[in-house]
Length: 323
Ligand SMILES: [Zn+2]
Image (cartoon, rainbow, N blue to C red; front, side):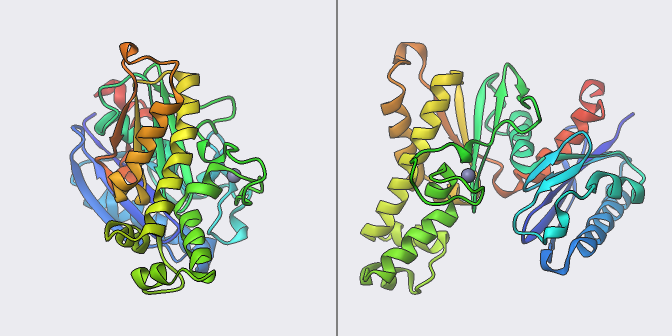
């Protein structure tokens, strides 16, 4: 049956919905504020409302919906295990069942970066490759692995948590509880923290360049572009940590490419250059004769999660084979 698929990306501040047609074309898209602070029932109501609106306005029958979650979930039972930036009542909640009761189409849940990985594989920078790594650098750091043409799930569906590799054994505390994770050293959150600490200890130039004591990663990127030394050093250091973590993965998995996405990746070469240099420095075992590893910026940007959720629904409901 000719039909479309709905993808919803549940973010901490914004919910993005997109309906994708048989050829990957966008038939409907909408963004709404999440209002996570209003609690679980309010967010659920927004999600169900979006499913109804999207299925009503797509112009084609919507065959299934995928929902990308910024946290840890059991993809089979659809129970949320961990959802930071949301109210605690989400932990242990049977989200899939709650959605399924209120919607007329089959729903599927997936981690948001795994969803973005599927989108890169089907419609983005990962299209030409059978083996690639996706990394999303935003407030946190997430990832996904495509191995031998398939998104690799691992034994419990959680493979790709590449932001929680230990890079510095006694480094800063990560949101997961461990010390020195990549996410605690090189995420948008970590960069903003380092900038704040520099300002607090008297870096007047940086304070002037960002115009505040509480800089955002975007403000920091602007300051770096304008030549501020501390801002540039923060991006270089973050890029080196990311490149080292990716270098380790490249040695273990021998992928053809790495695709870098997420809001912080929009800083472009500021971050990509140190990442590229560090991957090269740390993967000497792979001689250029073996082709090295290509590094791409995601062409899908902020749409990757929602597109990937739609692609996930397509794959899980068997639509990919029917296409
Ligand atoms: Zn961690």
